[in-house]
Image (cartoon, rainbow, N blue to C red; front, side, top):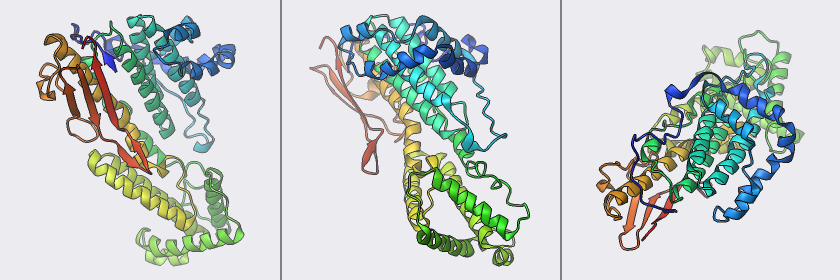
Amino acid sequence: MTVAQRRIDTPILKWRLLPAEYELRDGNAAPILLRLPWDQTPFFSQEVPKFETYLEIPLADEGRIREAGAGLPPRFFAELRRAAYRRTAGWEYPLDEKPLAEILLPDVQGGRAIVGRGLSVWIRYHTVGDQTEKSWEGIRVGLANARHYARTPFVVNQLMASALANMMVDRLEELMQRPEAPNFFWPLAALPAPFVNFRQALEFEHEFLRRSVEGADDLQELRSPDEWRELASRVIRYIEENTQDPKPDAPEAAARGDRILEAARRELPQLQPDGAERVPEMSDGELTTRWILWRRDEISDRITATFALEPLLAIDRLRGIADEIRASEQEYGLNYLFMMEKPLQIYLASFRFDRRVAALRVVEGVRHYAATHEGSLPERLDQLTQTPAPRDPLTGKPFDYGANLKTGRFRVVAPGVEVDDKLHNAIELEVRLKGK
């Protein structure tokens, strides 16, 4: 990054990055956002597919960005802004009216296309045109609508909302590098943390399998052995149909069934009321159904509880749960479905935005320090007394900071977390102060 020294404006929240409570209007943002694709069908089919290509243009290539255009028509942006300034978003999913697996989520794809890529094109167009207020307003609109998309009970929506928020951070980093960019230290500090709260969605995920397979949500119903066998078959068939794993042949399926029954007879007596007496009387279908659902519930509860721990504790525990999930899938040949397979990646995704925001606060603190100390850089972060440097939300420690006072360059660094041979959430900002 290359940034200019810049004092914090007054009032200090002049450039706030979310609409203030007093700016919000009563109403529901969801229908506004859902109506856009239908209201602009030709635009979606002809123009939206181009956005991803436009975003590949380097910001330094200002001519091509201007040539590509703003992407979103004025009326389209006005509708996004109207949604952003609504107080809430009720998506009206038929959660209690049909199996959860049958609920379609077109809002996820629409959010990526419009609030993510489309709005990013719009912001970049105005950024290279030095229209700071329009770029800033676009980022506000994007962050507010990302929060609206997160007002759902599905983990996939939370992940999408987090991705949208991170795209807006990308746009903010670009805006910060313009000569006229204001200082965003206090607007960044005023953002809620966590920005996207996964807790509600994780608790909802607990019920996903039960509420996706007919009959699985009521294990108290009296059933014959044949009915239990049919329910067990539906549960297993649903799991197989919703994973990428190849289906086992008949001998493999039979061997898997034997392993599940063995585990059920071994573990359920300690888990069921009067289990020691009841379990021996259960049919194979009942044993299979109860064990699969119990096992998934138990893993889900541990993941949800672990998310509430401090990061340094949660990361190690989630890594262990992920290892246990993989071992269980290999042993019993049943995938745990959806987001439960990668709890640590989801946990880290929930921190990515907040960590980036904290790192940018350090950058903005340095910009203010330089503007108030004749262009000099602080040697240490504890010198940022007017703009206190935040700690890294993931480690609880200060960011690593190093400055070359002669060249006007500084670094803001935080370690990543390795998961499956990939490094997640690492922060490494190399910043040059203009004029040095």
